[in-house]
Length: 258
Image (cartoon, rainbow, N blue to C red; front, side):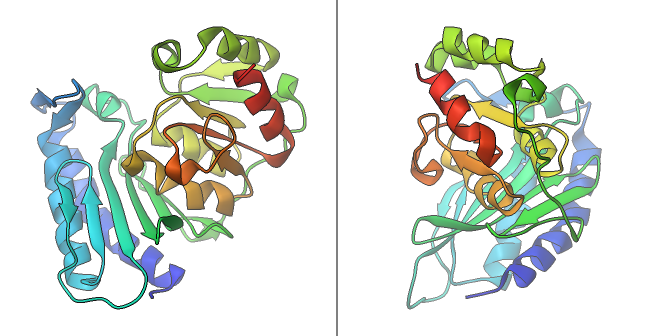
């Protein structure tokens, strides 16, 4: 099994090509829509193809799961645990389409279903955060969530309030928001970057896919946070996220699930 250092060095090596592709397409990209009505662009597909090819070359024992291209079986026989690379080439495609820099590339590694390494890369800001559940590094420097002991001092983030109304209880969410100092939709992967670097306190996403989740979990845990599904359960097997510091987490889950 490869180390966290090997993982973070590998992801760092991918960033120039990801950034070049984003700069090529942003602001002038054709948009298609998938079966679930979510948008996809040439940039999503091109970045994913590149990342998949590099993983296959460097780590041939791993199974790769891409949001746009599905599952790629391991190209080399592997004995031992199941290693899966989970890739979301552009998390926040709606922001990307509009030229808003609140999107990122997500790359996660799961071993036998448990997330062990994760990386969030914002190409427009050239900002890379990687974590292994014990530590989080922002461009190679340790980063932590900021302490926040009270909801009334907290900055609460979510990606899309309409999604909360669609998938969870909007009244409970708005009641929680009323207890917090600030509510903003600085969402998608960028919201988790803000948490991990001490610039926000709570992130709530009512609906998530596997490729959204895998990279975020080791980063938030590595930065000292608690990350679960909407009900306080295992985020790796859930379909939603509540992430914040350990003092507030129980209060947030209780407020959301009254």
